[in-house]
Length: 168
Image 1: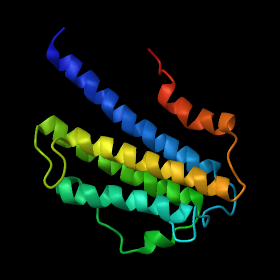
Image 2 (image 1 turned 90 degrees about the horizontal axis):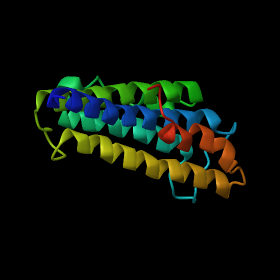
Image 3 (image 1 turned 180 degrees about the vertical axis):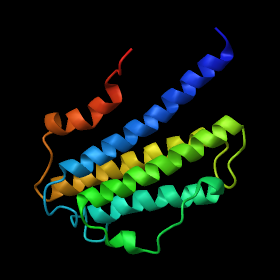
């Protein structure tokens, strides 16, 4: 076995982890109870809606700063007004594709990131950690409002996405 197929397989697995992260986030949005987008953990914390839009925005800003050749034009601020779950999902899917391609292109080319991160892989790790943090905040906001998810039900569309084995 040559190093090249092993390298390609590793890159595919890393990018798959990013795809799974976005799938989990999108599944979380789909599972939100009606009327929950304005919930907050505390009076001065971000609402669920704000956290979701924040994640989309951060993805695009960091790509713009680190891999400008993969950046997409940032819409003024109208995306902050997006209030429908399907529209939020579309934004998350878009920014996930942009970030994925940015990391893939820098790893494939061997070029370093322009501003942050010692290696492009660290961008993926940063965003998986960042979004996991906000995922927990979303669940806490729901719990504080008496709308907690059933762990078995939400686990099927979140934790199980990480652990499921794809076709061999």
